[in-house]
Image (tube, rainbow, N blue to C red; front, top):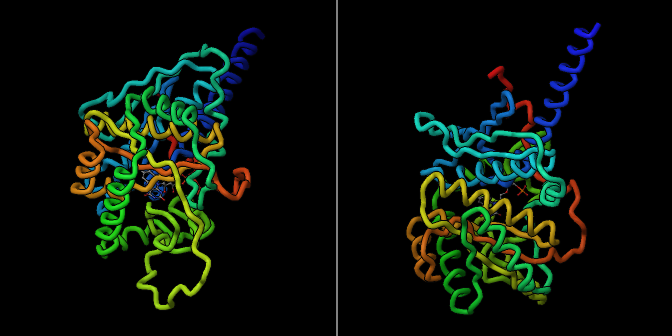
Length: 347
Ligand SMILES: Cc1cc2nc3c(=O)[nH]c(=O)nc-3n(C[C@H](O)[C@H](O)[C@H](O)COP(=O)(O)O)c2cc1C
């Protein structure tokens, strides 16, 4: 009887672990990724979750060296860490554990016993999303900026706020230039087309519902957001409206790292994800606008113009969503199912 009883206890533990594992990976896949490519997969055994990148989901035109792909995987790693801690585990992370397997990016080793009270960022995972709409005029206050900077620094990154009009002009010019270079490239547009406009059953890509209808170049902002419409063409009908678009004055910031290798890109992804979850928990909305970081010339000029030491990894717009509608599940872009990205093995 005792033997039978022990077996039942054992089975219950395994079943519970599977559910916890499922929940951790479900939160990991909610991370932001370039064009919602979700270029990751997970292997789990015996208290270890391995994070692997999937190069087949890379963007050969926009991201030939895989920087944005690794950054996306780093964001997923941070989500997994936050979820595991919220589930009561201490987490040790080993980056690039096997030099012979470059796609094997990290191991999360889970030990039971995390202190209580580490849930606040996990609570933000389901609400966080990229907000591309206009922000209200309400400024982001210095204490919020300090919290965002701290989130980046905890993960080994720096955060440079674009806070003078000279800096703003430099960033706006480089953003516009990079955007024009990208959109003049038919291969860039082909690639973007493959990751947009998927049907309602899609589990990846950027859906039309996540992107405002208006042409980004007609917005009242110096900072040109990426246009996810690939066949817009030149405007044939002049904009005759007398109402100018609302003026947008977001907080703009660059997140960067000292070096520019795979470890730095993983750090940048974790810094980005911690910053975005912190922003969400403080009611601050955000959207990346990374066109200048995708072209070597505009990326190095961005660093030079801002006088930063190191390498820009992310350019972000932050503010308060103007429609005052709290985030809902409707704001969420789709994700691949946990079963499709997680492989559970014996060891
Ligand atoms: C490295 C990276 C670069 C990104 N660049 C842009 C961008 O230039 N413009 C944009 O609107 N969104 C950008 N995004 C946001 C993704 O499109 C977004 O995370 C993805 O579609 C999933 O949607 P969600 O963030 O709402 O969950 C970027 C995200 C990452 C991780």
